[in-house]
Amino acid sequence: MASDLEKLLAYLEVEQMDKYLFIGRSPKRPSRIFGGQVLAQALNAAIRTVEGEDRAAHSMHAYFLRPGNPAKQIVYDVDPIRDGRSFTTRRVVAKQDGVAIFNTAISFHRMEPGLSHQAEPPNVTPPEELESDYDYWVKLAKKHPDKIDKPSLNPLERKPVERRDILNPEPREPVNHVWFKALGDLGDDIARHQTLLAYMSDFALLSTALYPHPYSGFSDGVQSASLDHALWFHRPFRADDYLLYSTDSPSAEFARGFSRGSFYTRDGILVASSAQESLLRPVEKP
View (spheres, rainbow, N blue to C red):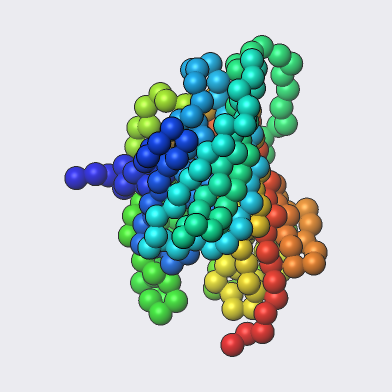
């Protein structure tokens, strides 16, 4: 029987139909396709059109255009717009029913030596001393079965350093830290680790932008959705080892929230960075 991680990877690693055409499928839950899934599938499609083991993805810039329907397949059309000596560029459009729901540009770079520096990692509680999201949500679903669904799969371990009450959110500083890792061995293929980190990167950014306000993703008083997403890969890493995702939100205005994120290894090495703008639209409570 396939593990939960193998089931997740089966969704994230798309099926190749032609040289530049791929098909992605979705789990039944949630009712709207999770943005991290589309990010990961688009990246996975682009990676598989790039020749040469010396090149890896280093940046990704994406827009979420329409909600995705998990009951329908997603077609990923890859445009090979540049194959240079040092850089390779791909543009990917994701469609359902012939209509674009997502588009992204992804750049790949040939590994070469250069200057090196990085920001210092935050000093936070180690993951061994924290409760996992899976255990927390199981208890929350048992306590509030009318509001919270019990999680059905557990492919990733997520351990928030500072947990917020999502049903009764109090305003707080827009800073968040979450430990992530895949619950299984991913092997040594860098493409698989990058695909999974792209999926992880859509967690926490939007919710961090809500922290200064009395709302969470479960609140009736705000309509929220990811609008765009950027991701940079700085150094090699393993997504099956603990990674600390440190996020903050320096601004929200005109119904848009802005968030930034940094992925650090247990040793404090900065391996990836992210940024996202999200829709945070106040609505009348029903």
